[in-house]
Length: 121
Ligand SMILES: [Zn+2]
Image (tube, rainbow, N blue to C red; front, side, top):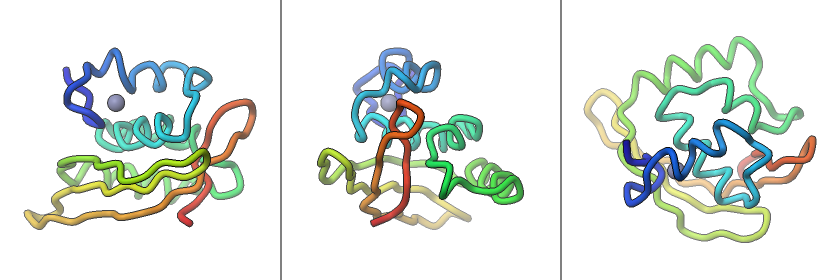
């Protein structure tokens, strides 16, 4: 299976490493990519783990995110710009047959010794 964050790589050589061990993630970009792939795979546990505790979704929101992630068709991730703590990206998906894009400049930091997503800038 090719990785959804980067179709030129195999999932097992790409985001699977992050999904199996978040401590192996050593840049904000890798964390961002692994979170996109976690959305595609509806891996809600990883999405929670890779989210800063102060901004992490509640239990109720977690359910809604999971349902939403499963209901849409993920198309592609495009990384526009990366810096040490930020990643600007576009994530394309189809919802009810219509193409949508999330364009965000995300802020990442470390918590409990690993990278986490904190918020949109
Ligand atoms: Zn990947």
